[in-house]
Length: 619
Image (cartoon, rainbow, N blue to C red; front, side):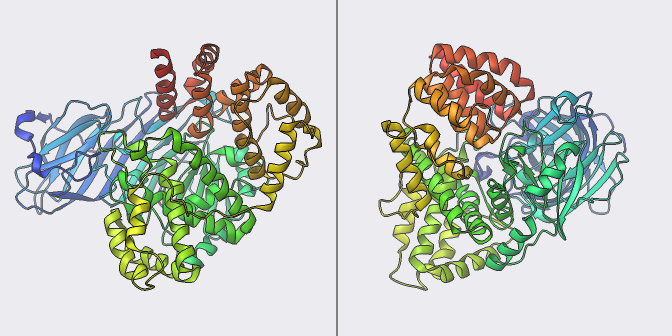
């Protein structure tokens, strides 16, 4: 690693960018109309004591405007130590740079001034301990208790907290990386991981397919590996890896199923890294290495639709990407649709229908609490945090529109259209307008009279769900609803419910349909019969604890606190904090739990909980 000469920091005035030339992505400072990053080469050291990544990032540049002399990058809380440029046929030279004042959402623009276009720039930097896209865990916070652990979460705009780059999904780049870490620890990235790599502290990676910045990913820890197929493996802490390999044994079958539907898998391998419980999401579709929560490891494969979802992103999201976060439904709506098709093909139509009914019911329940503008598939939140794009409307309403297209045009015609869509836009970042421009001639006009462009746009541009939106039926759910009504009416005892054979989705349906609140005596009777306090299934436990909070069922609190401390997945714990915060006693209990649980939570989870608790405190 070369050393950098003394820095040249130019005044901000010299690096000002014409407002008319601002990027089209409101969540990025990058001047992508003038220049685009095409390759990133990382050379990094992992320092657990300092909780930082330190080294260099070399960015290979494609200049669209030969007259441009400024490169604008996204950063958040990075310390920039120096910048060099490499010109064609010339030596590296030191460049001046400046960091703008920090914006609480966007971070700081890094403005680099060049006297002539450069083929690449190399930036020496280090991340901050509080980097929003990294979580540093002590040995005590891991399953094995022997080694520290670190992992990234770059979506939506958190890559800029550990790499200076154009942090917008409209730009795609390949990357290489050399990463040095303590020996005995494994480093993995969203790239070509080697299951046989020696734990020698020196790892090298290549991602030869162009990806957007939010798919840049890294993890370091005591990570074992088990292969689950000819092109798939599971990575996890040693005490977790065997159960994870069993739970995800159908991965190759899922890959083959999706290939039959929508064309070849274009990323080589599909591996899964099961992270510690503090991982803030269910899964993250990092190419070649999905990051997954351990909360789906329930022993019966009932929650492996998460793998189907993240695998589906290999076509929708990773291959065809939303160009800005307001178009996130192009990632998540298409992926949720494909996920359901994978589940139907591998596990049967009954399970796929149950999962969609649950999602549709949850979405309808959110209508009254969601402002009408945010119910559109392309909401206007340019001035808000990009993380807010990931609503159930992007996921479920988007998938519901595609289910409607399938119903109108027939599965064969719609599958052919969707396969063509993935082929046509492969390795590109697009907008909703581009998607519609392809939809009209390739499906709507091809089969006239079935659904108009105006009807499709109504789904996208109007709030709510169209009245004629179709939902499947489920005989199992209908039976469960009858039993639930009988129990609530007092004509059936909790112990007499025919629940021993219910799967996870059926338990979720039963609990989702309970009135708010129940009586304490009702919960006590149910708990005595089915022992849901302390349930190991995280999805069932989440719903049970919500019911317990609403009824002020105190016997559940000890196990609830343990659940909220052990798990950091936002979807599972944030609703509990929000519900507790509705009463003074519950708020006091929530604050006590959070004080103990906070060190084990990811920064994104911390931010959500602190926002909920602060809002109630202010009120």
